[in-house]
Length: 203
Image (cartoon, rainbow, N blue to C red; front, side, top):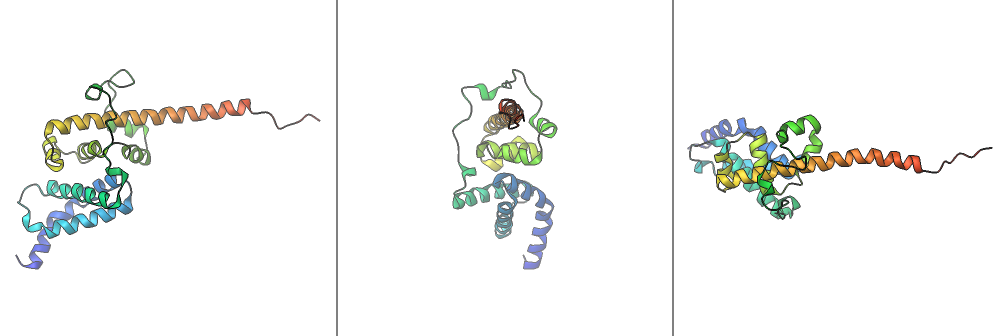
């Protein structure tokens, strides 16, 4: 294939997914500067191996490269965002819809839209182990099917569903903890002002 035709075909397929590439890179890395580095490497890799593309779902192929590029980047940077932490759940509780609220809450995306700003959401998601975080991002933010997420991550669909359940649970718990801290802080401040000795003296 002539170079100009190869470049043109690549751009026609890749550019429509530019936002998805940058969004996933940003959520995985945690900041826009690193996301730009990862996204740039993604396009370099995608163009380099463009001839190996098998005429399937190009968005799926491209996001798979995003994931693999992020893993390589994190290893080089020794980023804590790649660490596979111990399971934050105990027993089978993670596979249920029960939470500390004692009932099934609304979907996490609705919960976040109602109660959390974008910066808070980004910060909370960074605390979720990477193997759970990636399936949450692909499902809730990229609206991908379970089978497509399974192909990107290289795990069975059942594992994808289990990790998604655990990721949602983790996000709910992190948000609840944040909400409790915000509620407690003003109360502590008020208590401190009540107990603080007066600096005024009678004359």
